[in-house]
Amino acid sequence: MGMVRESQFHVLAVDDSLFDRKMIERLLQKSSCQVTTVDSGSKALEFLGLRESNDPNALETHQQEVEINLIITDYCMPGMTGYDLLKKVKESAAFRSIPVVIMSSENVPARISRCLEEGAEEFFLKPVKLADLTKLKPHMMKTKLKKEGEKPAEEENTILKPEESAVIEILPLHQELELEQQEPMLSSNKRKAMEEVISAGRSRPKYNDITTSV
Image 1 (tube, rainbow, N blue to C red):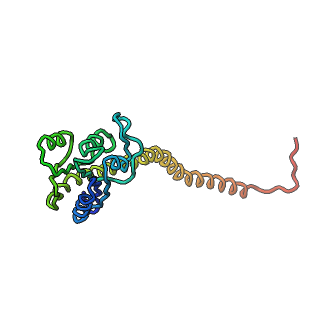
Image 2 (image 1 turned 45 degrees about the vertical axis):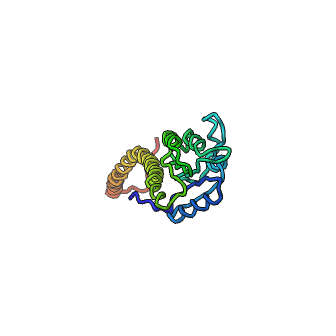
């Protein structure tokens, strides 16, 4: 129970460098993860079904059906930085629970602290190593188990409804069973009464050619 295979994890990797994208993709695949790569923060939002906007309420447009268990993004990217992407994801009610990990080739403590305060789970220094990715599994497990934990609750609600209606239907069913049990007794009583009438008619003397008129 509660066992989740690593092959079920889906990671969205975001980096404007083709070399770094291929590197992180290869490392994640070695960790038995499904990987989707994009080269910018705006394309990551597009993949998630979000749009760029200063209004948090305008972020939700159409939610994509593909389940994402983790987003790993470079910090320094043209247009939208990894920090900006992190903020967009955490502002979204639909995706704020997805863990976000930031990567950077620059070790800037203030930058690291800002990302962690905004909600990033980890901050990796490039080049990312396979040992670093072992830290991602607990974060992905949380999202996977959370989604699976919501399913039994929904199934339980759907099961309870038929049971409630079944209780209402059982009551008249008992009455029908009682009536069915009474019917043989009534029919036997009727049969006895008819037999008595027939036997009485047989015991009476028969008179031919008699017409009664008033």
